[in-house]
Length: 264
Image: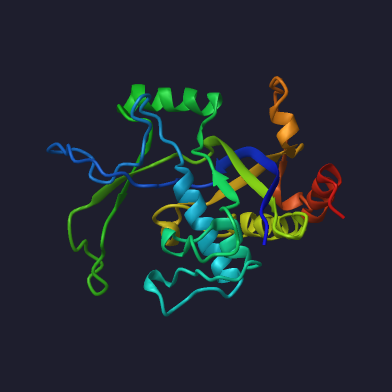
């Protein structure tokens, strides 16, 4: 079995928060009266961001459920196998313990951290000025089911406000494993489906209580780059136009990629 790099497919766009978003952070420097449920923030700017690990982990979980790959015999139900054509293991990779046994090759997907757009940064700056933090503060209370009285004092948590937007980028690598890269390109259909399912799920905590609904707006042009493209001087192109994910046909993206990479 041989492995050959064919090219990278760059999927980028905007993640829009349709509801408040809470991806938690640990803060060992708690202060009396301080926030005990903060959102994760860039330590240099103080602005919230979406870690690539959070988005990638959620996408993998959704694909495992969608493909009936939840393994109840393993801790956490995480699926790993040695099938070279398994879309879950091929796209998202397997643990280091199986690295010498796996036949799927390198992990195909790389999910970048998503940082706020300039428009959203301006909103965060207003929140910082008004409340001292670039987030909204939501208060929750446990209620006695019999008396309807609070069981304990209110607890507060930070959330990224609704309508906040973040730039996102996913690098999807295509490899030829005696198949000219056709399996990886076809698996992109599954990835697009999972991104659409993500819109009907929740990212971060508090999903069952209304938080974490997001929407993907993809740049209209999917970038496809081969080794020769990286050998040329990079000419940045401004991507502004986006298209709602739900309106995109995965088959059209796959057709474009196959034509660019000369895959029949």
